[in-house]
Image (cartoon, rainbow over all chains, first blue to last red; front, side, top):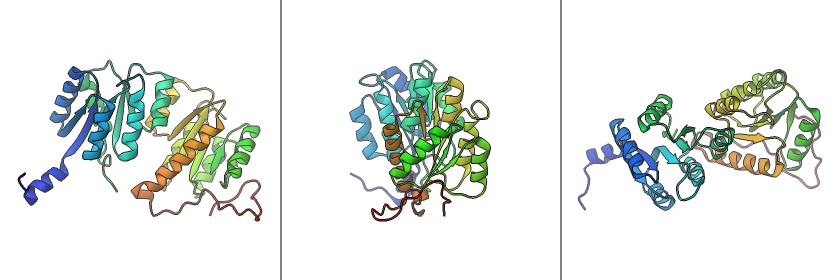
Length: 140
Length: 150
């Protein structure tokens, strides 16, 4: 493997990475496109195991996670873990509907925001970027 | 810890339960009293507030004020009247925990402990000594009633 130059290392260290976890390949690709256009490096996973592996190998400033991965509701737990591992990350969970229960689940899991999964990825990414502050992902 | 509820039986019960677990607890029976405590520079590791007191959803004012304090305490909202509007506001304010009444105290203890531990591990708060839970001395006196925090 080629040794990276100092400039390359600095470039890589500045990359802002987003974790997208969704079992629907088309949705995942849409998020990938949107996030790339917004300057993030998207890392994608379709299941819990891959997502956890990705969390051991990258530093994430943003997470977009479907509430339903292998089984209903497991995305919430993953969102909570992502927030615990990266406390300053912005973590969005895509839920089938916005109810009091899903909002309570979002608060108690520690995720930043919940969006209805039926919304278009560009709408969701745009809403996230409106809320995303410079401190998200930054260790102070 | 600050516990805010307009029902005295609830504040007394929660105060007793949290004190048994080693916390120093202050109570407030209204939003305005809680805001006064927060403005007066008391520092809390956790603020647990009811939602509906003098007015519907006014507990969110307590939560908002608590979130502005630095270092920020863990903020828990307890309510029997959660709806889409107040739950959305609570999420947008980054409330740490939303408990629905009747509150499962074991779940609440677990959540508060977990959130305090997590806060302690955050880089920005790592320099802050933990003051919300006093050391238990088996032979020493237990505090009774409200206590002023250092």
